[in-house]
Image (cartoon, rainbow, N blue to C red; front, side, top):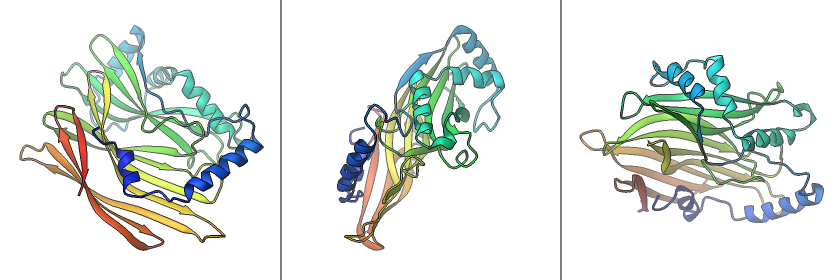
Length: 308
């Protein structure tokens, strides 16, 4: 994008400035308690991968998804699930194991992966399919299974002669970051004959690995272009972020950012721009309001944003 979604958040002052001090102190304590060799990941890797499937797996998935379209709630067949889970790179498997190991002895050895379908759509040609998938790393331990997990997006491109799986990161790769992500389908959009899919990306540092005075949760709407077996992030619009920090010396601080997001369309239903009216408050007192506008750039097939 001409200006990315994370940099606009820093410009409007969402993050608590005292957080930097807290991060440095926490890092020092962790390094003292756990030598670097013993430390493991505390969330899944954020990596981009393009994996071409074998001919037998391509044929099986092509047949399975041939009749499926739209917001698919079907449980994957056992064979289809096995194929998709087997496609995961070793970085994901090792990352999931390391993450669950940080959750204590009750979770040791309980790491699991699942895969589910978010959305299935035909591409421009009827003999092609695009399947949005979510891979989830979780613990089979009953106390953690439904509350704590980390998810990553993948897109399965099924063409007449081949299939490929594209793993899509939604943040920078960070082995020491404790944010866990939950991903939900939002809607399908059209921008000047370019189809987009929007997803809700919710993250939180509520993670069994780590406890401390700083808490954060965030919601973003990510807009993706799916074309030619490639996935491109066209815009990332912040909808909500809350940060709270307990500080016995300086007093507690809670910062909340809220935005009302609206898509504006032309007469043909194409999205021309996205509006985001936001407010930011500290300990319940309004500190800032403003508006961001994301304008569709057909040449680049992405949104450029400006602040009013």
